Length: 159
Picture 1: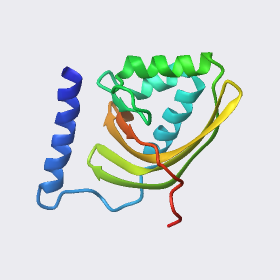
Picture 2: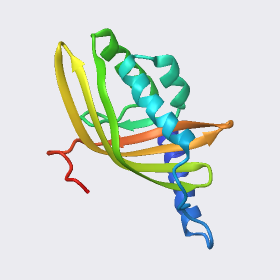
Picture 3: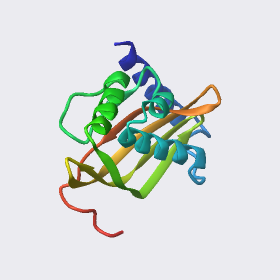
Picture 4: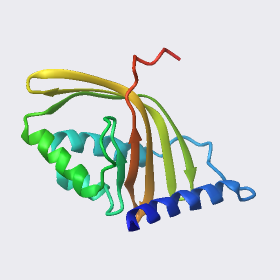
């Protein structure tokens, strides 16, 4: 319950910041440190690198997977990463063809599309979809307290 309250509070603060006069998302380029943290999280997940992934996911992490499974907390996400790797899974391709961001001080929300190909059991699987990812600057570094992924029924149309 504490995790839900913390995440809801973070979103509430971001929304209040957006409504304050003169405040709101910055229109500048996406912070390269945030993009680096995002890339590291995805690659660490598929590599079973629970050390790197664990450093990026705070205790109050909430993940909504691209598959129809229950929400995941930090422990379940690290366990899923470990099991994928131990089962012989590997990342073949990772791309983010479209990413946009809103920054509210020390909170960045990324919106975009992903294109991932993994191999598991000798069979490749390509997944494309949309994402919403949250990043919060804590202790001088960007951490990744939540994501929401979905699968696209068909490849995204060219923009």
